[in-house]
Length: 88
Image (cartoon, rainbow, N blue to C red):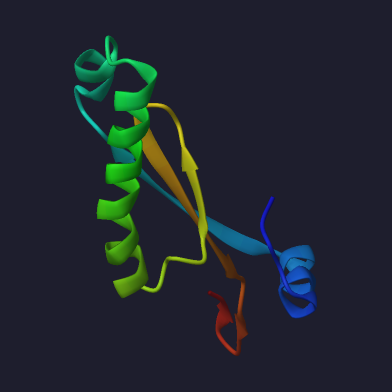
């Protein structure tokens, strides 16, 4: 679940847009399938270490990030904003 403030919860109840970015690690399952647990843990930690600085630079480091086993799902919640011409 998303970690939200009171204002964000109000926005979520009134509607929001959720953007999901899927980062696929092509061939990772085939490559890592026979790794011992310790090596797989080191591999996954190294991936997080590579990904984290880029997320921070893009100001996405506070968003929900879900590891799927061979890729990542990054969710960004954007409240719907009412303008005089409609909604964004």
